[in-house]
Image (cartoon, rainbow, N blue to C red; front, side, top):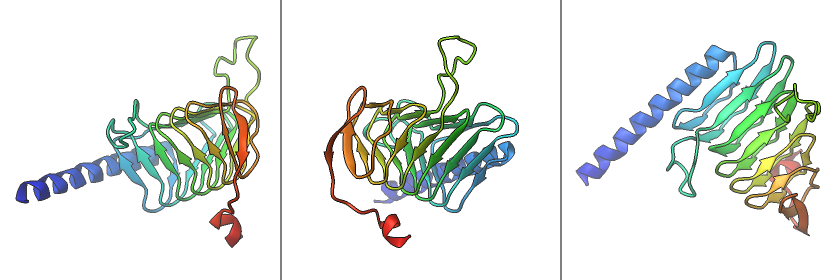
Length: 201
């Protein structure tokens, strides 16, 4: 029992260290993070000039390979890439090896769950390539759940309470209160659920 307690307290110290490093890194980039954020492993941040990154209260970032036992392939990476971009994350969101990168606007509501190795980006990235088009905003509303390995691409809105199945590629907007999956992602069925956040507002 003493060994288990010792290991537990060592893990807590390591967790606290990574939390401190992540907070300091975010502060150095001019990123606002709310209260009680949890960092399991080091989250990577990058903020382009004249951009905004805001992270709400009680958000969790899993970046260790085993910080989520479904398997995390990379650290969480949160960034803006082009002048005037905005990345806004509301309260109680969770990320596991998630990349969120904004060239224009990415806005996540409350209690958005991003499964392991998800990617959210509002750009084709290679903007100099004539086959690429301009970035387009992404809005993910309250209480959305993205399954493992999901990719959410530019110009998409995902309505509140919706669930996006594992390995889906979201290229078009998804309404509220549905289960959707596939490549390209399509609605499979409606679900009867009202978000606690909607009920409050």
